[in-house]
Image (cartoon, rainbow, N blue to C red; front, side, top):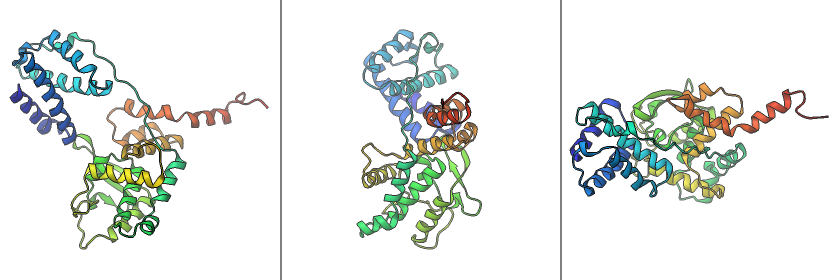
Length: 302
């Protein structure tokens, strides 16, 4: 079964352009599935019938969260569908199984006041004044600005090159999930922070260089960005965790709060389906109530 899994992963990478993060998750989840199958004496895909699949789901469902469970099921389901399409299996056992639904969680975001506080307390001049030995305050501030300004994922910010930023037109080229490119606006504040950061970089600079570097002068990794955000949250004295994704959520929520249409937000976030973007409408109730109070003649009695 391990050989079939490797062929499937190669198919996802070569034919469907799956990201390395998705491939890593699929490899882990399918490795778990193969291990479970081996422990039950199932070494051939044809033996993975409806009863076996149900038993596997029952085995893992009390060990992980609902969304992790659904991710693991999705990986196995895609793998089996691939085997059916390749005539390595006769029928798809998932056709006969009712699967649990995804648990909907409202995204965690910062208010506009919290966002201003985060930016203010991480201004390069303030950070450098407190810690004169720290040499990356400009880079960190540019990270905050670009992720919040353009709603980037952590991996998208990490993958940016200098040439992806158009300082004249005010757009950046982003490579998202599935290696799909999109063009996203970027604000003047973010562009100013990027220019300031690049001015501190060793010359010459060329378009193919990574936009954000670590202390070894190589591309800043996803894990490195997460660590930077953890430190910035401490400076702002946030009680709850701060992640790059919370800034992405803040980007979408603040746009909707200020009247941006849902379709435009979908395009800027790089969501394939509008339904994925619609979750942000649930956190914009404050603006909805404000509009209602201003427009409905009986909203507030005199």
